[in-house]
Each structure stands twice: as C-alpha cells, then as structure tokens.
Image 1 (cartoon, rainbow, N blue to C red):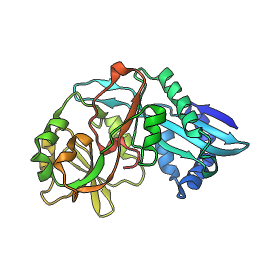
Image 2: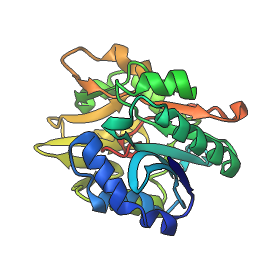
Image 3: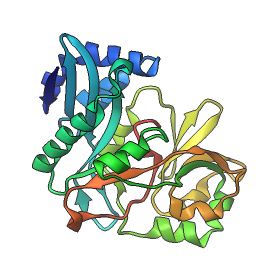
Length: 270
C-alpha cells in the first residue's frame, strides 16, 4: 500500500482519472468531472489537501478537503476547509483507511491553517465515524425543510439566529466568492434583491440570504428548501421536513470555535 499526500492543484490533476474511477466504484454513480474541476482546480481560496491510498496502481481510498473560508457580518474571517468526496473501495472498507487518510489530512490542515477548522455534511452512515474516530462535533438533528417566507418570518428563533452578526457562513457578499460559488456546474440561479435561490427540478433551494428581512421580497406562494440547524428544529412540523442533513466540524485550536450560520452555499451537494 502506498499513501500519497497532495497539497497542490497541479499534482492532484494527475490523479483525476483514478479518483473518478474510485468514486464510481464506491458510490455506483459518476462524479461529474466539471464539478470536480470546479471544487478542486478552480477553487478561488487556494489548493486542496488530499490523501490517497494506492494498492499497486489502483486507487482504493480517498480523503480530501477544499479551502472554503468563512466570514461573519462584522467583518471577521475564518480560514477553513470543507470535507468532501470521501470514498473507500468496497474491497478495502475494514482496514482503517478512512481514519488513516483523514488523520493525515487533519495534520496537514493543522500545519497550514491558523484555526485548523474543517466543516462538512456527513451522511447518517459516515457521521458516527467522523464523531468517534476523528473528533468531529455533529449537528445530530439538522435537516432540509420545505417552507415559505411566512413560516420563517413569523419565528422569533429564526430571526434571532440569522440576525446574529457573530455567526460564520460563506461570504456571498464578496463578488469573487459569489461568482465562484454560482459557477458550480448544473445550477440555475435566481436572485431577489440579495436572496439567492437555485432551481432543483420543479423546486427551489434557498441558497443564501443576508438579513432575514430580505426574504420579504419573495413571492408569498413560493415554497423552497433550506438547511436548518438543530437549534431551529422546534419551529417546524414533520410535514416540513424533507430529509436529514447533518452539519459537523472539527477544529484544532479551541480558541477559534465559532458559531455557524448555516446556508446551502456552504455545502458541496447543493
């Protein structure tokens, strides 16, 4: 077994074909090469950090993070990374490769990042491993809900959460960040005075908004999907919930622990 650590876009590009092959083998679906290029090679924040395990010439495990710097509305920024496209070949899933590669990446993040912050959205199957073996804090009850502006603006909890200027999210007020994020292939975006929606089939995802008051510009009859933090779950009924969607993070230096303001733009899925 050979382990390869990568911290440069040009070096990573040479492994692209094997990464795409492994993703298809592990998840039984194609990883869109254009999305891979967008996240890893065209990322405006810098170089990814990737650890790869090869058995002879065959890639059998992959753990990676991409830079995704966060900011709050009082002008403070936080260097961070987003964990994405973790995959281990079905033939190699009981040999500790996930933890071994993740630990290597975590150590490299510690060397390069002031905060050592990594965020992500692990699924139900992988979340226990992130929490138990990699020291992640997991938002157990996070989910995606289908709502309209009336439901949101009537909630004091919602308004308090999203008006909190100390909370960190992806800074969509930056033109560079906004242009890169909206360039992710496959998206049809709609903007209503700073409220960003993305079409998903016949539905819309609420990707980002600044002050909650901005939601007033949306049509009254428009329902949309949005990520909800576990802090806000009490304001929704089971009829609103579309699917579980857990947020998590690990941070190396505890003095930097932030509060987060979840938006769909923080995820690699939406």
